Length: 473
Image (cartoon, rainbow, N blue to C red; front, side, top):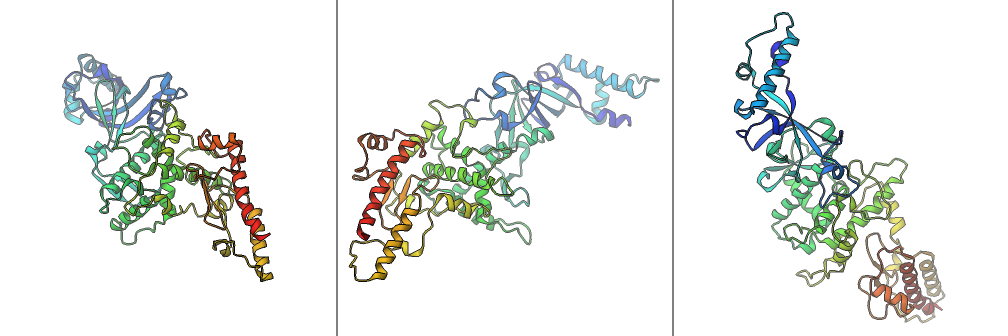
């Protein structure tokens, strides 16, 4: 190796508070970010939480350190001790390269004038890492073959900022191991900024009550068409875009629930909770396919069947379940058309390979004659009509009633009657015992699969379907 190349290798690592002087800038550029906690490599996925880090996290029990390469703009950045350390390491390198002649008289000043000085620095991490803050919103929408069409920054040198005990560092690049452990953090904040940009660019100024997953997909595809790259841009379908948001839907929900600040509230939270529940079921369905593609999962994500678990995003006062329940109890505001958006949202198109399987387990699929409203005007004049009604009633009883994943409303397949467990009408619970009636109306339940909730629900459905059976009889 030549003398020049050998001396170009970064010096160190040295502790920040030892090597740098008070004359050093309070904000430096950092390359090859490397992180560790307790001598084990970690990444931003393991250090950045929406709320306080859970007790199970390693960063609670140990000090998080990060390393990176900085380039000195001036030798005045070095403390007296730091200058001494570097001069000694420079001498050792010269000795290793030329043991016989032992080059003399070559100083740090000489090296700085010839090639500059780069060194590894070691810091203790503090506070949250910032990514794509508003001051660095020089962003463009790009289309990538892999992983997905995604929001990227064309000013990356100022978009990721990590804090030490003494100064800020603009992260220019990652060490490979740290980058692999930071993918979710980077993608989630790109999605968050994308949502903000879609809201800013919405000339219709869609109210928050109507900002659902379908609205996001529509706005994203519209923006993508306006900013297509290349002569033959790759086709992007709705299911693919839904999959991008689905992978981090629960993190987006946690962002909304962690604070009531209006600047953070960007989507219809009640609808987003429903979407998250659908995603949970769809993830599980996708995992049961012969070839599992990990649909709707973040990097290194795991599947928890039927559980909307936000605890991995931090510990919050009162718990996440309480936040979800409180959000669901809020009355949805009316849109300008005078009705809630709940009745007009589109059905979410899921991953193509799981759509049919998912629907078959969570939704009812009926023949076209079930769309006709049942009436009490049966005349008994036709054996054919009687047979149709008998078959219709039999088919109702052959399907186990249930809720579409993420929803709390059951719709009768024959008439307009519906049961909304979050908004029970007078008379809905007339067939229930006083205990079950109080449980449902007082919302003294957490999950739809609670035995008492299921029993009460089936009793209500049975009581209603008995009306249809009596009409046929």
